[in-house]
Image (cartoon, rainbow, N blue to C red; front, side):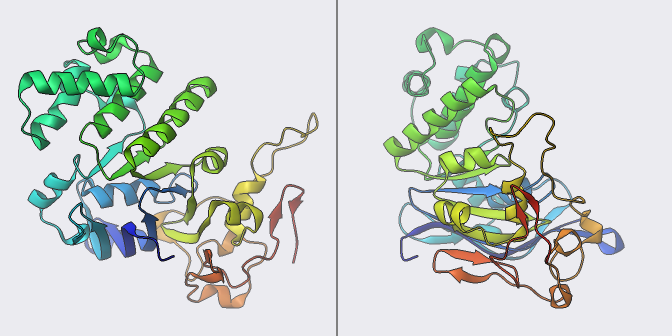
Length: 339
C-alpha cells in the first residue's frame, strides 16, 4: 500500500437536482489507483461507475454536482490537485493531456462531419505547440501505434468508413495522443464481438506497458476484470462495497454482492437446461436507497445491525470490505447458501 498513487478518491459524494427533488448518486466513494497499474471499477448498471468517471473529469451532466469529498490527482511535477475543487480552466488543462477517457460507444463519441485525423489532431491543437505538419505526423504515428493498417491514408477517413473495431482503436489513439498519465476506459469493448474485444484488450495492455500509464477500467464483465486488472473496486447503489487485489478478490471474495456477481458468470461445464445463477431482486433506485448496507434487501446474510452504518474495513491487508459478515458464503456457483 506504500506504492505511489496517481489518483485517490476520498469520500466522494455526487448529487443531481435540488431541493425536494434532489438525489444522491454517489455515497462516500473511496478508492485509489497506483502509478502504472489498472484498477477495474465493476458493478451492475446503475451502480455509479460512469458517474464516478465523469466526476473525475469534471464532465457531470447538467444538474449534477459534487457534494463533498476529494479527488486527489498527482500531477507530472509531483504536486497534488484536488480535482473536485478545481476551476473549469484548470480542468481543461488536465483533461485530455494528463487524464483522458475512452467512452463506451465510439460512433456516438466522434463527429461524423470531420475526419479521424482532424478529431485526433484537435487534442494536440489544445494541448501542444506543434504546427499542422507536426500534428499530422503525430496523428499518423498514433494510428500506427494502435495498429490501424495504412495509417497514412486512413488519417483522412471519416468515422463511418471504419469498422467498429477500427473506430475503437481511433478512440484509443485520440485518448493517448497527448501521452496522459491516467486513462479512463468506460466499457470500451461492450459493443465489440469477442475476437475484436480480445484484440482491443491486448492493445491496451501493450500500450500501458509502453507508456507506463495507469488505467481506470470500468466494466461489468468479470472475465475482463480477471484479464486486465491489478486491483478491483466493486460498486453497488452508488457506493464501493469492496476493494482488493484482483487475485485476492477472486480467491477470497469478501462481500456477498461480489460473490453474487462471480456466481452469475456462465460456466463452461454448465449442463443443458441448467438456469444461470442470478442475484435476487434488482438495484434500488437512487431515491429509495435503504439505510445502512444498500445491498441488505437482496442479501441472504443480512442481520439487524446491517441497517446501521457499514464502512469499508480491512478483511485482509490487501482487501477492504463493507460488510459485517465479510467472507462468509452467500452466493456460490452452486446457488445461494442460506444462513
